[in-house]
Length: 508
Ligand code: SF4
Image (cartoon, rainbow, N blue to C red; front, side):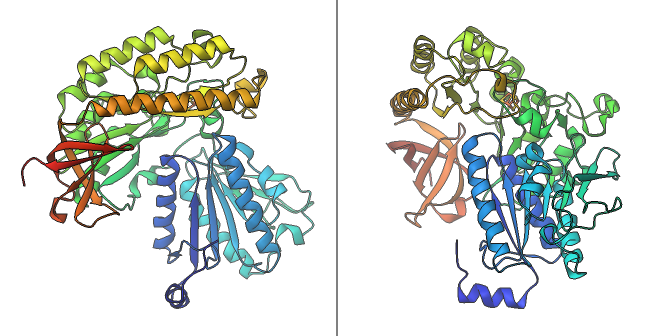
């Protein structure tokens, strides 16, 4: 744990309550943490990176992989132990996918945990923190001091938008009011309108903007449909307004976020179908085109997509609109059709290949990254070999390779997790090594070429150098004046070190 420096401590003494938020998982979680930080700051809380100095520590968690969950559980154990052994006034909260996945069980297993808030309850966090602190100041006992050790959670009722369920633990035998010091806010439906109004604070030139949440797909290994619920999208007009505000604040790149952005617009916040007939973008390609035309915006990208929903129309938008990224994250997961079917991916490897070819034909120079899972239920050596061959043939620019780990509560929970760990490790090693070679080959082909680079910050190695990204998201370091930050310039790529290009300005 970090210990605060003397200056930091002095600063803290002068100010209000200090809050430390630690984020695990994806960019959506990063964004949610920013929203919560902004909301707490508005209420007078001071942000700190130091757990020791904090009055409130919030873990924003991820359930997608076992490893991320274990890290969060370990951290939670440590915090709860610390609270029990000498920091009774520390407020400990947990938000994100683990809150949706384990719900009130977390409160039972961790008596020192003060609150949990689900992924659709981001805007409840400030209220929960304040409520806990207010109750503590009134001397309401923490659960482990009350008669409520074994109490069952009590539903308190529906809140404002009619879709929100607020749950609180009550001591055994108590009336339906929260008398203990643990609180939860977890809802499956809805998405707070106010969420869109909380503009993220971000360093640099890139701002993340969630446009939808949840997922209607049923990939059998994935916990997201359980934790984040069904898809719901933010209105197109609202998104464009947000982007205008971000552009006014000086952001140059917008990254649109969602579990499956390509199916944006299937269902809107509030289920209001009239949005569809309004003059505002209500499908993803239209939305991308509209966002890219906001004055001041130099680049638009997105994360993440399901291959079955990536369309020719979107590829054409990438080709025709100069501010739209040439990077596509297209998760293939496996190279074998039987495994893809067991995974519930809804495409064959041939269909995936066809789409990849179309993208590369319509958008020359597009970089494609992917995800692969090795050791999924029943995967044989031959089936893995097909995946290996796909990796060799499809020439992805980069790949995230995961060893399959069964997540409780997913459809794959009913399938045997029968590939030995040592075999998973070996397949993982083989793919990592292969992808490194493939990436090197793909990147080498860029040396000597010219590319538009959006400069985003100073290099950590030399303050003469700026770092930036090509339109296909490849990273470039160039000797350039600081005034170029936030601008797009033509760069000639001269060499490659690991995954970073070095280059020189074509004109100064
Ligand atoms: S598309 Fe599949 S892998 Fe992606 S979030 Fe939805 S269910 Fe999970």
